[in-house]
Image 1 (spheres, rainbow, N blue to C red):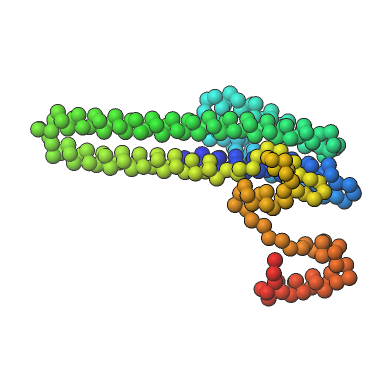
Image 2: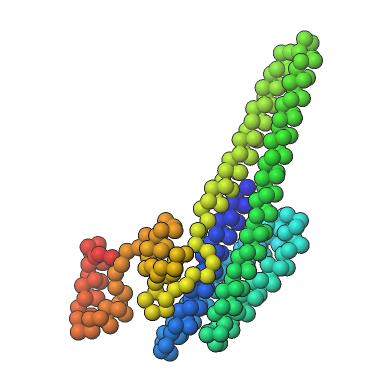
Length: 267
């Protein structure tokens, strides 16, 4: 259903947010000045808050209605396990904020454990959806087969009325079957669109390069562009302009404001 497709997309976003939480923790560990530490702590809190809201949308919203992930009986039994994983990440984030260095590896493990449990529940939901689609298809085939037998037996007596009724029934069955196929295709497509980036990514706290699967350190932009549809453009923020060009910063920023107001500014 469309609800299942939304859950699949939301789960993909949770994977991405788990990476953001881990990356923010690494930045916090590498911060040296009080200002950098405060900025990194704020980024970590914001990433975790967004991740927490995503968890509530995916799981807790369906808990009372027993829909989505929790419509599958086996998932209902494991729901508390996912909640425990969530609480583990929450506690680990608090420890990282209090003392980053010894808690980073623990946070990464908690994020991986949560994502693994979420993937298990998601897989069970998708298998249940595929089972339902298969059941509907088999039911349709049985109904059509029975209808053909009835035509063969009673065709000599009520051929025309039965044929008209069969045509109407077959049209409805065909529409129902096509609807099931469309929903299944939508779920498969949603699965394909999930973010390919997953797990704890090693990132240099100094130059911000990421270590790829082959052990090479790559620029962050190239690493993400090779694994997603995202593309990057570069510019300078106000803080960097003032740091790099302190003597001319006010004039540069004023020109940017004027160009932006007339629609001639460049990003």
